[in-house]
Image (cartoon, rainbow, N blue to C red; front, side, top):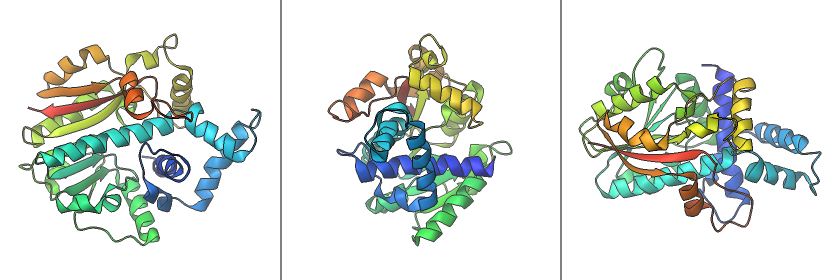
Length: 301
C-alpha cells in the first residue's frame, strides 16, 4: 500500500465529515470530532484545490465554491455521510438485539469509539486496516491528545499476506459473540472474487445472527451510456489520478442469490431512490444521494 495514498484517503473522508458537521444543517451524519484528525495545512490543500477548480463558475466567494463542490459536484461527501449514518442506525438496532462486537473493516479515520462513548458500555470495537493506515491514525489520535478506550482494538492486516479470519483469530475478537461488521467505501475497488472471499471469511468466523453492512455501486455505474455524469467523473479520476481504480459493481436483482450461496441473507438493499428518501428528501441545499450507490444489510444464517 502506498503510504501517501492511504493517508490521503483517510484524511479526505475525515474532511468530508468535518466540513458537514461544521457548516451544514440539518446533519446527515454528525462527526464533529473528525476535524481533529487532519491538519490546517491539509484543510487548506483540499479547499484551495476545489475553489480553484470552480473559479470559472460564477460563484460569489470561496466558501460558495467549496460548498458547491461538497454538495453537488462530487458524490464523495454524500456517499460518505449517508453510508455512515445508515450503518450506525442499523448498528444501534443490532446492539439492542444482543450484538456485542463491532468490527470496522477499512476503518480509516473512523471516530466511533471516541464519538459515542455510551456505546462502549456494551461493545468491543475492532478497527481492521492496513498497518500503514493504522499507524498514521494512531499518530493523529496521539497528536489530538485523545485517550484510547480499553474497548478499542486495532487489528492490522495486509490482505496480500493474510486473511481476515487469521488476523481476527490472533486478536481478542470472540468468535462466539454476536458481531456487526461495517465495510464501507471499499467494495468497488476490489475484484468480485475478493469481495466474496471476504464475505465468506466473515460468515465462517461469526455466529448466526451476526450482521454485515456494505455499500456497493450498481453495474450501470460502469456503463458510460447509463452512468450519471458525476459518477463517471469519479470513476475516471479514481483510475487516472488516485491510482485506485473502481472496478466492480453488482446487479441488485441478483445480489440476494449471490449472497445466499455464501450462507448470507440479504435483509435490506437500499437503492439510490431509497437513500434519497431517507436522508436527503427534505434538504434545501445541494446534497443528494449518489445515483448508483446501494446499501446492503446482510445477516449470517
